[in-house]
Amino acid sequence: MTQTTGSDTSRFRLGAAGAAVTLATLVTNALAYVVPVLGARRLSAADLGALATVLALGAIAAVPGFGLQIAVAAHRARSGGGGAGPLGLRTAALTGAVTLAAVPLLTVLLRLPVPLTMLLAATTFTTVLAGRWLGELQGDQRFLRLAVAMAVVATGRYGGLVLGLLLGAGPVTCLLLAAVTGLLALPILARLATPPSATTAVPPTVPPPPRADEPAAALLRAAETPRTTDLAPRGLGARQVATACTATLAMLTISYADLILARQLLPAVDSGAYAVGSVLTKGALWAPQVVTLLVLPRLARGDRRARLAALGLIMACGVALVAAATIGGELAFRLAGGADYLHLADTAPFFAATGALYAVVFMLVNERVATGARWPAAPLWVATLGLAAAAALIAPRTLTGVLSCALAAAAVTATAMAWQVFRPSRVTDSTTGSRSSVRTGEAGHPETTQRERPAAGRR
Image 1: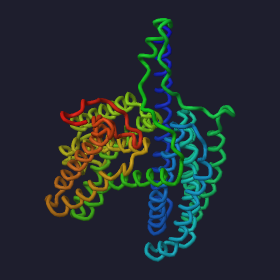
Image 2 (image 1 turned 30 degrees about the horizontal axis):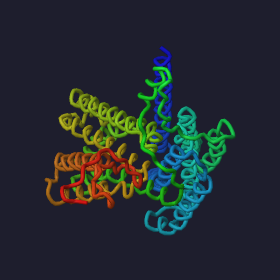
Image 3 (image 1 turned 60 degrees about the vertical axis):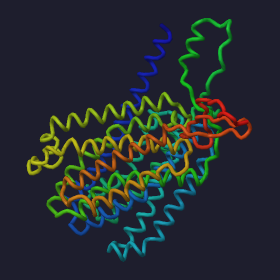
Image 4 (image 1 turned 45 degrees about the horizontal axis):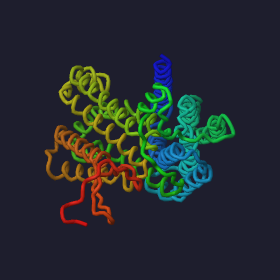
């Protein structure tokens, strides 16, 4: 009875954490959506175009912040160590400096005011630096505080913009207010990430086997304890952040590649229709991402049970969304684009399936990053090139042609990532000549799963 109660309590806490993180994500998306809606009503077309361009550049420049968060979270989950402060500051300073150095180029090529591009560097600095504290909260599995911190980051990032637009200010003043609110959010994040005690939490390890004289309940608890791979603590450095940044950039690139290709290859009308359909793709992609966020600390410790459970949840969510798109395709397109796009209802399940497959890919890429694998995003870059080549050279230049290429690329990428994560590889013992089957998902820390007898005639 005690075990059942404890299990129910854990499930309740995890469910509450998931609900809180989901709510924080909704707040973030809502604030991001309010900015262009208000801008269209408060700014001239020229000012709106300039502000939208700067916000798009800011989204790209914020990628190092996501990489920093993933790297810090994985490190905290594995070793519970510090060192994130100086690294976070260096990452944010470097990203801001690169953005600042690009001011002359951005000003000339994109015809942007100099103050606007200079303020972009300031907002980039605060956005990237926030990833340090988000990663600490995520790695320590303090998910309720993480949800609050995500809402604080969203408020700091977009609150100044909303306030400036409501006051009727121009793009420069709006971005200046955003820089101020972003800076004000940082002390709040630091306070939220402060450990509850001076003692740094150490991630749980697999308990030793119970003695024979222990009661049956202890034996049962030991048997039910999830097995984790013995991952030795690795230091947190620039390489880990760079790997996570590259993986994040690859995930964003492949998820938007089909939309860019549709703009390039299709007539304007079909390109716009594809943009409406891509709303379903993005919905199926981002809907289950809270699962990846919650499970990342366990993935960093090599928890196979958590990996399988997370993968099952994401796949179940994808199947449900594809089924819903199949049944309610007209409703989906009516909500996404209006009555003018109802003739595309038959394509709704294919758009949703593409996003569902990419959700699986994102979870597996995060698993590879969390366990310190080398080149975790290599299949994504290869698939992006393959998608571009197939859409430009092989597929018909129609909406269904581009969509078919996108769906095939998502399926191939998901298969390749699953093979990388779950494949066993053969290694030979140089002393005995025997071969072992090991898991390669945890780079540098293989786990033997099967021992083969030496081949005949081999010493």
